[in-house]
Image (spheres, rainbow over the protein chains, first blue to last red):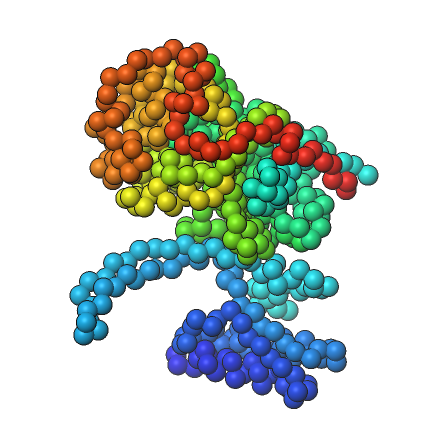
Length: 127
Length: 347
C-alpha cells in the first residue's frame, strides 16, 4: 500500500524534474497547497501531471510552468478545532465545528488563456 | 441575430453601494427565444465580456418562500455565476425545478398553507433545487453557484465577489421590485436583518435548508444559533430590499392566512413586529431559548413583545410600516430605474 501514493514533498520534486526535461532552465512554480506540509497524493495522477508538465514544455516558447491547485469542489468543508491551551501547552478541552469555505474557482486561472483542454476524468476516456 | 432582454444592477449602482453586477432575466423572455436557462446564462456570460456577475432567472408568475416563511410572488427559477465569459462546468449553474405539493405537506410545513389561499392558489412554486438539479454538488454544498470570482448563494439571494470579498444581499421582495421596476431601499443590512435572516422555517427541498429531509431548523428556532453574535454575522454588507410597506403587505397576507410567528412562520424581528401591531398571536413558548438570546440582543425580548399596545388595521400598518418594522433605518430609497438598466444581449 505504501507505494500506491506519492508523498506531498516528493510531488514537488517530481514536478520540478518533469518541467526541466525539455530545457533545464525552465522554472516550475507550484501554488495552492502552501498550507499543507504533509499528505499523500494519488500517484497515478502525479504521473499524469508529470506527463502534462513535459507536454506543455514542448512549446519552445514556454519559459515557466505554473501548476496551480484549486479545490475541485470550490465549497470546501473544514473542521475547526477550537482548543484551550494551558500554560504547560496541554489542552484540556476542544470544541469541533464545521466551517464552509468557498473559494474562487479555476476560471480565475483561465481569464486570458487561449486554449483549455479539460482532462479531468481522463482515465475514463482512455482508448 | 436575436436579442435577449436582461436587467442589470451594475457594480457601483446606488451611489457606489452595489459592489458587484447582478443580472436578472425573466424566464418568459428566455423561453420566448427557445433558449434553455443555461443557454441564456451563457449568452449573458459572453455579453459581459471580461466582467463577472451573479445571474438570476426569475419566474414572476410563480411563488416562493422567504427565509422566514412568508410566501411571495416571484421566484428564482435558475441561477448562475459568470466570469470572463465562462460558467463553471460543475458548480456555475443551478436550475430550480418547480416543486409540487406532496402528501402531508400542509401538516409537515404548516407555513405552506399560504399556498392554498386566494393570493397564491394554483401558482407554480420554486423553492430549492431538486437533487438532479444539484448535479455535482454533494451533501455539504449549499444551493449556490460558483464561477471564477462570483458566488451566488442561497438560491440567488446573496452574492459575493470572492476575490475582492465584497458581498450584497437581495431578498426576494427586492428582486420582485427590480423585476417590476418599482422602488427599493438600499443600505447596510444591520443587526436586525442579521438576526432576522436566521429565523427560518423547516422545508423539504427549501431555498436554503432541507434537501431530502425537513432540515434541522423549524419555525421558532434560529439557524444562526450563534447567540449574541447573530446580530453581527450578516450585519455589515449592503442589501437591496423592498420598501417596508411592501414587506408589510406580504407579511400581513401570511398573518391573514392564520400563520403564527414562532409556530408556522419564522420569528424574525420584522414578522414579530408586524404580528404585534396587527394583534395577531405569537407562539412565544415555541420560540427556542437560543432564538430568544438573539432577539433580546436587538431589543426584541419577550417582555417588550408582550406589552399591551394599540392594535392597528391593515391599512394603518402599511401606512406606518417604516416606523413599525425595525431595521435598515439608514437605507436610502431608490426608484429601480435609477439603479437598474434594461439591456439586450445579441446572440
